[in-house]
Image 1 (tube, helix red, strand yellow):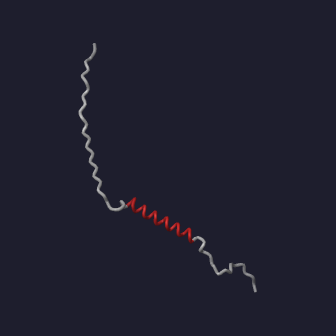
Image 2: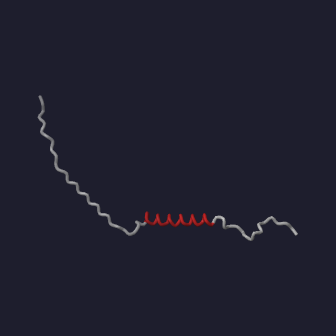
Image 3: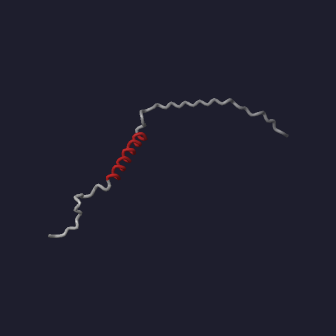
Amino acid sequence: MSDQSNNSGGNNGGGGNAGLAFIVGGVVVVLAIVAYFVFAGGMGTQKKDVNVDVNLPEVSAPDVTPSQ
């Protein structure tokens, strides 16, 4: 018989990064939701009507007489 130095636990690996894959998947979902709100306008389109009317009183300078 020959000695083999393989893992004989019956576990072929691949499960060590399951937690990391779950976290990365959550980050991808959160980024997709943020991108939707940024690029699609969020929860519906709201018409923004900005009407600014500035009425200032007329100011006149005092009369200046030239000095001689």
